[in-house]
Image (cartoon, rainbow, N blue to C red; front, side):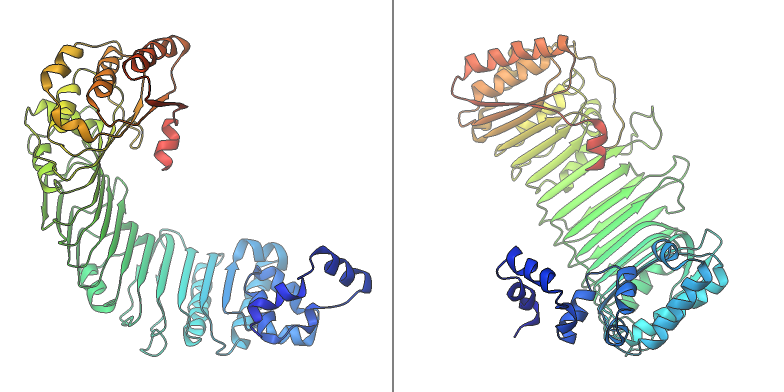
Length: 498
């Protein structure tokens, strides 16, 4: 019998069977086979396993065998009492566990005595590696002055490891010389690495790596990622880091997400070569130099870029039209307010976005400085099917706009001759009651021959809602059969959390 099905058989007649157990005081749990008890232990917290282990000699043996172990120093210290008792208990647990197979080991540890605790943690990791662990998830608070050294691992002991996650809360990590034969996922967060050849270590020690996540990895000045099997890459760096150059050359890369903020006083460079890249997200400050090569399979692109300092509106060396040219094959494109306004200021026509089907614009409102660039992008997107215009918020940087401004009326849009908007099916738009919004929306309704649905979002005052209601009445009059949905828009904080 499959042990995973046993609980269903035991409780097949529902609450009546449970009531029967309670009335007869039957200890059904002790009668379960060892394999099922171990399986149940895998879903319990460590303190719950400890409580269960004192019930019988059999459970004291079985509680050493669960393949999934989660240790949290805060939770365990509350249950076991003082810190010394907790560390002694875990030392004993690890030493008695022998080499029972382990699939995942998760450790959340606040170092009370950094040097002593670090040595203990290394000993625990050596033990779980000898148990053939597949996933290591380590979060250690050692402080900015602390140093953590991953234990030296033989080819045998690290041959099973597939997932490695490290969070040192700003502590220094010494990279091991071991070769991770089976490692597929590597995640590093809040880690200091003073290693000139970190990228070389990735390519040589993690040759089968498929996913690499680097969040606030401090100490690296030049990051070079060259890998044959890497498919997913995330790089997230806060302002104040030393990183000034990112080079990515990965033939198999499918998704790339970069969130890079920095100060103005240093030159920054971004170079990407990924012929199979499908999803590209670039959020942060604009760089002084960038190169995006061989990006021919792109499906989705999100560009949310701003100057390094508030109030700096443009850098002459950063041409938005050139950036759009490199991602012109994308089917889904999301742009923020600053990029659209910069395109208007630079007075350049965007490239032909022939493959574009879904256009998303994150703008404060349809102010006069945005309309020319919006019109140019739409004219260059003959096959657009879904258009979304929503309020600014993802970067928390809004360029103020005058809602009342409205020199681009129906005459302007009619003169643009958007004959290629005939494939437009849905429009989602945040209205604030401006004249530009009214003219643009009415033109879309009249021009969109297959337009099926318009979703209106708003978060304005009563006065603004009155103006929006007038816009909606005009839309309904222009197309009585059109489906119109009216919803309350997300707050700026909700957008930031997406």
